[in-house]
Length: 308
Image 1 (cartoon, rainbow, N blue to C red):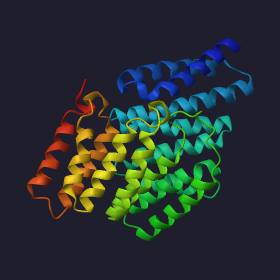
Image 2: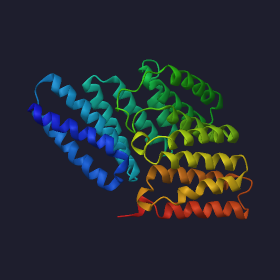
Image 3: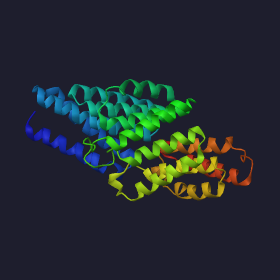
Image 4: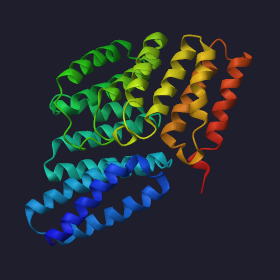
């Protein structure tokens, strides 16, 4: 492999990372697949160990993008597989921070596929030795999964430990300031989601509002895809728990205004969770609750999973 071909591959991966949130999932998958084939070809023909490691690191980064894109398209198994492969490439590259990040991505995909225990089984073994920059993400994912399986004390303890690492973790060096970089807002979102699952509506609403403000203050390329909408969905669930259905309906309006091609599976799963939260509330049979449920059904009926 020539230096020129490696430089081209590296530039292409960095471009895809930078432009990720601005490309719709279906065309994005095509671009990522092409880049993946290019890297596989270069790995096949490269013999210099330093370059091989560099190629594995690039392939690991690209694998994270593929994992989330497949999840967006409703192909959870493919998303989980690519997250696992990304971790393997990171390990071959000797890049522990990337390997742990890929493990966290894998856990997140499993969590939204209603597999919180499987998510826990991925993140908990990493906690004793993970790099400081990845501890907060692991702990927040642990907290949310523990809350989902009913371990209240464990979830609250994990949240406390995660907050300690948010303050201590070094600047994320993996993604160059792009949407994949860990930021405190990501922790706020996961903490809000944890408190929703613990039934702490007031705490969840406060965290979700902080998260929303943090995300809205950043340019699109510096925050996760549909970040504002995800924060709103946690806020909606929190408002239902605090029995403020008017505020929940107000927060749902901008969610339902999202174009169908941007209604990814990651959002659909969150909307479905909101619907279950409404249905389980003591107001489930009121006109206000029925209105919320109708809007969630409309959202999912026009989601990306139904398009061709």
